[in-house]
Length: 254
Image (cartoon, rainbow, N blue to C red):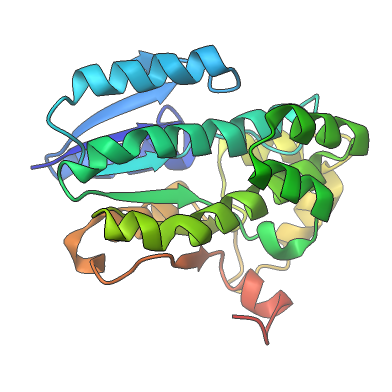
């Protein structure tokens, strides 16, 4: 059996991934803000380093897989918190986990979103990809739109994965991403209860072609498949698990 590490494993999609991996007999190291093996705040450089050091200490022989699943939704304030956690918290740990994954020819699955291609400020996305956290967070707060911050961070994260997947593969690490659609998690419930975003998000959910919001287990099924040897020819892929929403909205883009 293997050794896997993940962030955001306390609730929602992350918890479902943790449960599936554990049920298959794997050891799972979970990082989260609470209820986890490693408690760390990934919105800060200090918290990210705490997570990296603790995972390294717990898995000196290496990792078979890593899933950076921690994230917050567009209703949080300030919007820059989305940037700090969803983009920089993910990329910093993804880069730091590469040596551990190399030891076991492991793989990584990032969490994108079907919000990524829906439109966001191009300058903000570029600032994320440049690695300038101060500029990116300032841009997110100046724009002041939580949905832009969320979708833009996911777009930047997906581009980061695509740009780096070939180099990672040459070093023995497969990297892919899952792009969930609306999924019934505490994060989604919080957004639906938001005064500004709630009505629009609920209405958007009603247009899912398959007829209902996803559940965490459905997204976890895709993530654990990508972590498995059955997906060993998949590299740099973005798999939409969104009930058909992306295909409905962008039928000619693939």
